Amino acid sequence: MGVAKIIGVDPNPAREAMARRFGMRHFISPKDTPKVVDAIVQLTDGCAGYGFACIGNTRLTRQALECTYKGRGCSIIIGVAEAGAPARDRPQVRRRGLGGARWRTDAPKIVDWCF
Image (tube, rainbow, N blue to C red; front, side):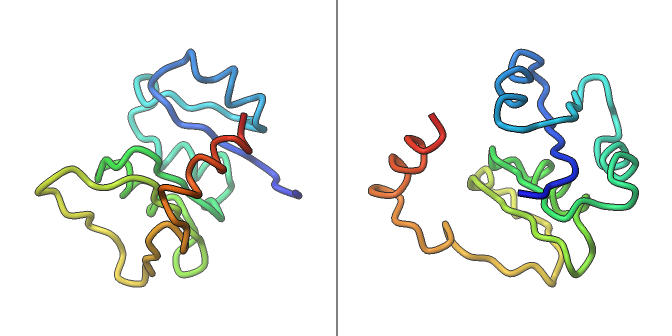
């Protein structure tokens, strides 16, 4: 698809092999890299065009927002923030719930596409 770099961030090194099968080229472990956003900025020579946060943790959501191009990048937030912890995102972020997907019927199809 013309993507120059796909960077995975996960504390579990066992997930690296599976992510590489899906196209990841760089792997960052937050256990070994205390400044994940800085590491991504260095790998991308500036900032990423897209950032994904997939677990609903507000700290990780913030990192996905911080590593994308200011005003031009796209952060995809998959997951709901923990109760009582509002996401402190940038004001220019537009939100779309599931991109119009219907969770009960579309989620199983998306999972089937991946496996």
